[in-house]
Image (cartoon, rainbow, N blue to C red; front, top):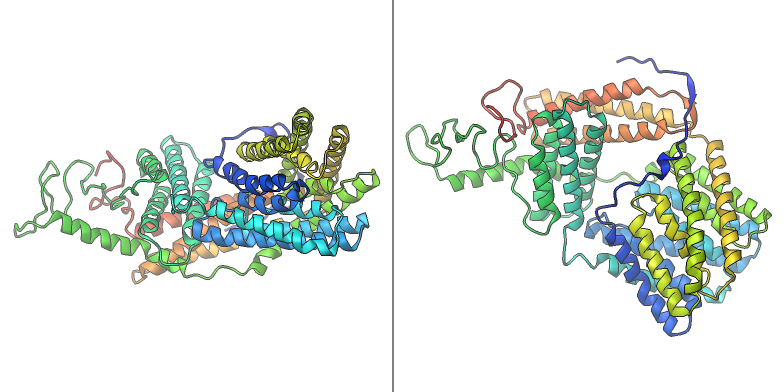
Length: 609
């Protein structure tokens, strides 16, 4: 492997039109949209009935926690939602105490910027999101500028905690109806991605993007299935076998059957039984692709494929018992590595925070400067500029720029929408609450298509929330929001440019080294005849995870603003070598035939033996 690394520096072009292009909506866009309405409505309507809408911002802080963890299995979702609620309460408590101790705006902006950096780093390290840190930063930053006394803090925190508990119940409500819904969706996405990769391979295209996306989807499916550490249920085991079939398809995409993968994906998305996958080395019903039956002892059944197998002595074997025993043996062999991986202890949080230092520094610096500039311009709500800056920071400069474009466009259109909605909201408390609920629903329903489209509804929502304690002049709110949006986006992006992630290249080199070592280890294990299935599976999973991490690290580094050129050729060669090794380990497990053999058959309908 060549050690030469390009050393020329370069500047990346920043997209504008592409940042605004609409994508497909999320498969479960309606879940967070309905959840946030169900979480916000009861507490807010109750306070309206009691004539205390001025307290609604505190209950809304807890209700917004219902937006989180919709992609997690319910056992894991319960824990994640609990931690999100505790994190929200912690940030809110710091903000309320700070607001009660000082009214110095510079100090409050500094506290808000530090909170935003901590929330950003922790959410990225734990992969909590979407909406990640933005909601938490909005809650804590807004609370910093609400007049407060120490005696009021316990009551306000109690309201937020009660609403958070209700949001937890809303988030867990679908569990009795679809206990494995998140795992089913993740498995279906992995199967669809594997089918897309197989179609690309059959079309004669290189398909590097489709292959990387498929490996990422399969990796995400394993993360979803393995996040629950207790003994897996029968359904989860069946889903694990389907993800294994997706991995088999990725190992030999030209021989995979996209139609079958997609049919499995459609069946998994529903509430019915998980489809049986059979042996990946032969047809699911035990027939050879040419129509003749295949028996365990190597003999053939009747030419039409019907009837029981025979032993050399002519005795008939029971098909059901053979199939049952074979299924049990295959399940034990296929899932032994899954059990081993489930027993691995996750990495500690502190080890995941280190690489996020540049992003945390960007957040702290950008949020603080945005707030200071907003104060210098005479803004009454500098937290709008602070939250705008906090929402920009992504994995690299290119993505941060795209988010800045999306934020500005969405907010500018959003203030126009607020100007149209404000007269209706000012008709009375009920009208105001209904407008807030409608904006909540639309924001979550649209944000999956593109961030700017969701921001069109988030902006009037934030402006309407400021009117809960009392109606305010629409013109002042619109002007203040426009100015703070432009200030936050401009200053926040300049801070991101100033704090360049010089570690990006080193992260790529480290990821390349990890892939090389994982590939060598997997190759040694696959070549060793005495290797156990657990050792082979652990080596294969380790290499697959390293490949996914390499692609994510390379993509993140490629979007940095100014740095030395990345070793793109080495990355591509390492990925290709890793994919060949992964295919070899799958064949070593017996899930694919060795090339050129005639004793086993490819897992493709209509293939020739």
